Every structure is written in C-alpha cells, then in structure tokens.
Amino acid sequence: MSRARSRFPGMSAGERIYSAVLHRDKRAEQELDPEVRRNLAPNGLRLVAANALQSSGDQIVNASTVLPWLFNALGVPVALTGLLVPIRESLSMLPQAFLTPLIVRVRFRKWVFISGALVQAASAGVIAGTAALGQGLVAGVVILVGLAAFALGRCLCSIASKDVQGRTIPKGERGQINGLATTASGVVAITLGLGIRILGGEDLAAEQLAWLLAAGAALWVLVAAVYVGIREPSEEPVGAGRVEKDVGPGPNWFAETIALLRGDRDFRRFVGVRSLLLVSSLAPPFVVALSIASGAGGLSGLGGFILASGVAALIGGRIFGRWADRSSRNVMTFGAAAASAIIVALVVLVALPVFAGASLAGNLVFVAAYFLLTLTHTGVRVGRKTYVIDMAEGDQRTTYVAVSNTAMGFVLLIVGAISALLATLALQWALLFLAAMGAVGVVASRRLPDVSRR
Image (cartoon, rainbow, N blue to C red; front, side, top):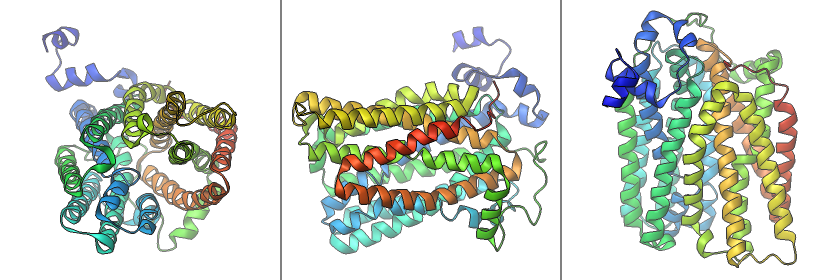
C-alpha cells in the first residue's frame, strides 16, 4: 500500500487501487459529469468485483461442463442433457427485446441487475438442492426448470450491466473492467479444473456437485450485494436523453426490432459480425467431441479442458481488455481470423494418416486447440461487449444490447442446428462450417466503424 501511495500521491485508497489495476484515460474522465467523475473509482472497483464474482458463478453453474456431469451422476436420461446449453443460451438472449420497454422505465438500472442476480442465486440454490435430494427423470426436469429461471435472470443482468457500465465508466476503461473479470473467472476455472482432477473427475458424486452449486448460489448473492453500492448519476448522462414512453421496443417489439435492424446500418453490421463470430463459441464443444472420437483421454479429459479454458481466460482477460479499449473492432477481427485458422489447422492434423489421438502428442494437440480457441473467444467476448457499450449512449445502448442479444438468440438456434446436423455426418464438417463463418467475419468486421477511444 505504501508503494501505491507513493505512485499516486493525494489520492484516496479507492483511487489508488483503481489507478493501479487499470490504465486510466484522463482525457475521457475530464469529459464526464462531475458527479460521475467523483464516483468513478468506487464504481469501477465495484464493477470489477461484481463482474468477477458473476464470471466465477458462471464457471460453476456451467451448462457445458458441470451440469452434464450432474445429470450423469443423478441418472438423468441422456436426451435431457442435450437441452442444457440451448435453454441456458437462448433464454438469456431471446426475451431481451421484449423486456426492454420495461427496463428503460427503471430510473436506476442497477436495480434491474440486482433483481437478475438474485433470481440466479435462487435458481442455483434450487439446482443445488435437487442435486442433493433428487434422482432420475424428475431431478432432470426440475434442474431444467431451474436453469430456465437462471437464464431469465441472466437476461436481466445482461441488459442492465452494459447500461450501468456505460453510465459510470468512460470510454478507454470499459474493456479493462471486462478483461479483469474474465481474468478472475480464469482463476476460478483453473481451481475448479484442478479440484475435479484431484477429486476424481467424472466420478464426482452428486453430493459433491451440490456443494459446488451451493457455492455458486452464494456468489450470486455477493454479486447483488456489491452492486447495491454502485452510484449511478442522478441526472441522465450527456447525450443519453430522457426515458420516454416510446423508447425501446414496444408491444410490437418484433416488428420494431426488424425496423431497427433495417434502419440502422452500423448496428445491423455489428449484429451480422457478431453472428459470424459464433465460430469461437460453438467450436470448442466439437473439439472435445472430436478428441473423444479420436480416442484421446487422460490429459484431455474434462478436467484438462476446464484447466485449458481457465488458463486462456487468465491470460486473455487482461490483454484483450486493454486492446479492446484501443480498438474493440480489431479485437473482434483478430478473434475471428485466429479461430478459423486454428480450426482448419486442427482438421488438417487429425486427417493426417500418422495422427494418433490416443497418443500423448494427440492429447496435446486437442488440449492446445481447445486452449487457443478459448483464448480467441475470450478476446471476441471482451471485444463485442466493449464495442456495443461504446457505440451508443443511454437508452439507445439498452435497446442495442437487447435487440442484438435477441437477434443472436435466433441466430444461435439456426447456426447451432446447422452445425449439429453437419456433425452427424462428420465432426470435421461442422468445424469447417464454423471456420468458414469466421473467415467471412474477418472481412465483415473490417467494415465496422471503430467506436473505441484511441
């Protein structure tokens, strides 16, 4: 603390900590309203803490890893396992345009986020209780209902969090906050992966997973508690406009969503680019499936893949956070290009006659590919979150976030169905389809305006 005090003389403890963990943009800060500037450091630290806790909770209540293991431990029919990811992803996106007219009428958006966090805490608690007491089909159905409620709570948090961050943090610092949260989630993933490997991997009992999920519920309560202390400006930020009755999608929200996509060229391009960037999010599960089909095991077991994703988040969060503040568009472009190249390289390697998936080298290839894809996805996530926050102000930002996420819910279902269909023919075809999407995304992302503060 004495070193921090000497580096940042005349600052409060909160100011010193905030200046130590982020590279501050003094020019952007001077353009803020005095009230926002006065609360910048405490708000920024609370956002870092809340986002880190939220990302940690996501690692625990994970529809791609932890919940499938839980289903296996409880003897839930395999058919229900295939519903986990679609429910988790689609229900957190699809309702957002519909909910926007309600949310824009809430003066302080932090209360929307807090409500969503508490819904997720309660849902995780239901899932944990079911893990401890349930069994078979009934347990599976209850967990799916709990996961649906969890996704709806996340829907509220997704809309509100970007608006709160846009109101309280200037351009040039938002990406770093997202990056720090991603780094923290990487630490949690590494810890979780090591714990799973030490405790027996797939042999973890349902009771052990129940305790893990209960810890996730507690994290969401902490997220809500931290968010209570955030101070949004008492007046609307400059350029934000007032909350009017007709702001955001209304009763005819679907038609108005289509009208927004048709009429706003830059926003339409962003949604199109974001759709093409699904390459980095949809490819990793196919890499895991390809490793299993190739006979890989041991090093590339579930614990190994979680460790790889954790290391990727730990490394990528800080790097991509700062890069996104300089040019979030370039981060997205790099992510699409890198993900496509990694996929093509993996498919070529696996197709070689000398490749042996069960060998140590084969294991290393799959873990390395998974790690690199997760690393690029970290950049894509940080980049697109920062881009949509920077491209708009006030209630327009809320509408942009909601409409883009709703559109992505539909796109996710379509692209997911196509890639799943191709995977029934061969996993490589699904991967190459996603790589082709990413290649188109590279070209499309270069046409986006650069909205970051250089």
